Structures are given as C-alpha cells and as structure tokens.
Length: 137
Image 1 (cartoon, rainbow, N blue to C red):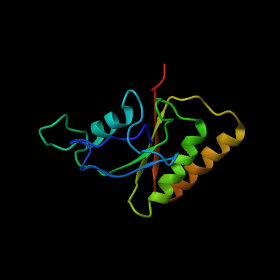
Image 2 (cartoon, one colour):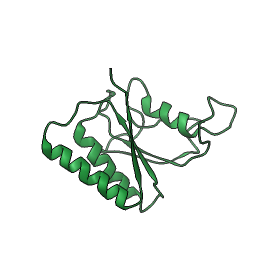
Image 3 (cartoon, rainbow, N blue to C red):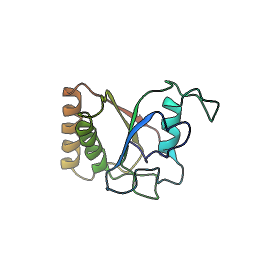
Image 4 (cartoon, helix red, strand yellow):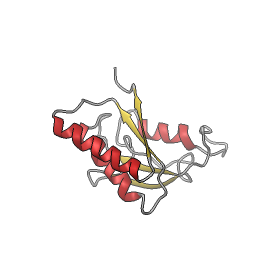
C-alpha cells in the first residue's frame, strides 16, 4: 500500500493488479513516484532495463492509498487499504501487506481501533502486515 504504481518495463510483469482507494487512477499519483520506486526495488525482473529487484518477479498488488498529487495518506486510509487487501486476497494470494508509513497519525481512538482490527483480521487470513516507518522527516 503506497502512492500507486506506474507501469513500465520493470513493473509490467510483476504488478498483477492495481486499485485506488478513492476509485481514481491506480497509477502513481505522487510527485516522488514513491510507490513505483518501491515496486521496482522489490520485484523488478532481470530484463536489461532499469534495475533488478530484491525478489525479481514477485507478484505485486498495488493499492494506492495516497491522496492524489501528494506523498501522504490519511490515517484512515491504512485501515481501508488493509481491508482492500483482505478483499483482493480472494483473487490473489496476498501473503504480505506493506504499509508505507509517514503520514499524519490517527486523529481519534476510533481510527486506531479500526486499524488494529483490520491488521488482526489480515493476520487471521495468513497475511503479514509490515510497516516501512521512516518516510517522513
């Protein structure tokens, strides 16, 4: 779950599905192209273009949770993104959910509770939920 993923020679064969939580373009809508870069670092195949990822050919399901044109999410988007991964697990064997943390924190205990509930449900379905914390100053 990140800022979306653009399709290029390093993502075309590894990105098997793309959605946007806001129903818009699932491509990378951020100025930094963070989601595309992360997808390439994780799974870019050996193809004489760009880079080779840590796990060439891994299957990636991209969930764009970021606000279009920005490199940040609302905190509620994290819970919504995990819920989307739970739903997509019926079509794709999702084993890990990566959260690119770096946006504002929760604004209420209800947001925290919803997030914890979603992470617990994902774990019950056999998914690991990992956080990449450090994307903010």
